[in-house]
Image (cartoon, rainbow, N blue to C red; front, side, top):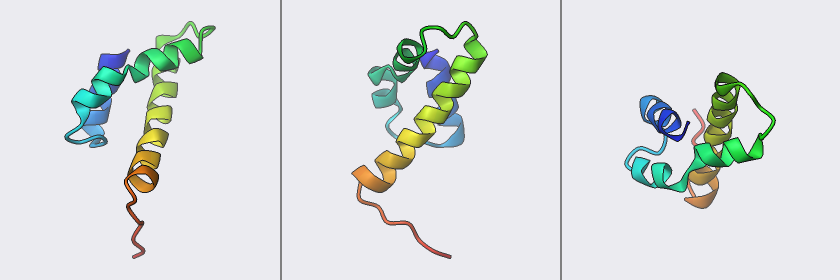
Length: 71
């Protein structure tokens, strides 16, 4: 699960240059532990992608202090 999640993140361009950090934090494992009753790998991966995308937005805009641009 974690390897699939890292490949997905690389493919869409989130955590660029920090994929080793993402791989080592075990976000896929976190999602598996958070959803112990899920018996579908596809649904679990979908939930993990949503969660990781949310965390990436938080990391970029909140933790790194970036400001959104308006166009």
